[in-house]
Figure (cartoon, one colour):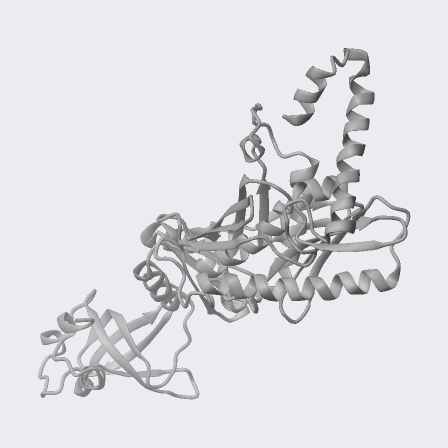
Length: 433
């Protein structure tokens, strides 16, 4: 506004606007440097190592898996975390070959963040670069896939910006992940360092604002925990930076990060114990490699049947690890039971809900897995004496049975009497109640 008003009073012509802008910016830079050198203060009155006011809030969006708002001065980021199954990984098509990515952080910078009007378009080079920087800042702190088998996507929406919005995205994304129940190894924060070069003296500035980024000679973004650095990006407007000044900048950035993390901890000191009730429930089971074919079935018949019957997403890899994802724990448990039925191994002492496939005078043959059956002797059919097998078991009936033994020839002895006694029920109708 001052720049435009001065141009109007000076009657600057169109052909002189370029030169005027250069002179005006030079005057502002002189004021910027003079204030630092003489007043030992910055344009907004802060000390050289002073951080702008910080506020944080989590769970700001009720239906998302995790959310947080991080504000530092006039820069504000809204970060939203969404959890998905391992099948939701992003397929990256690179020159070296394809690979899958389980963590994504996307950065959006709408025009209104700086009070401008513009047509919203796809992300540009700046948005992509800031997103990658924030992503790399957080990746080292994510739990291993075995511990947390989720695909994670974070979107950072910049609501207002006056410098260092990428580092605000790091802070907001960290809180959002913790709010979503992602067990990150440590809290991470980011800070932007600047430098005012006055020829005979160089002054380091902590947490630079937008004008300081524009007028200063360096934009050094540093992200990390209280113990170390996870990402660094530096833009210089001067020929070089001496090692001692760089070391001092790193030391100042650590002090700033620790202060920021302490402020963030006031909103949420550690990751939530459980993921959101709206996030997919995920579990896994391990099966033998030679059982993978039995689980999948001809043309995928078996695994498709499990998905259709339970609504649970089922994925199996070459090592025999079966990943399960569903909206409810009940769906996952139902899928696990069906998988157990298809590929389970016979274990002595294990109780099964089996199907009677044949009755004979001396007992009943019960199928506990596809192609696996055992004999329940008439003396093991019930706690009381049984005169006729058909009084207790008919072909097609579901019976609870316990595996008593498996001989060298693979013959399996089962007992309904022992199963009912162990479960402390009188018949199958009470099972699960």
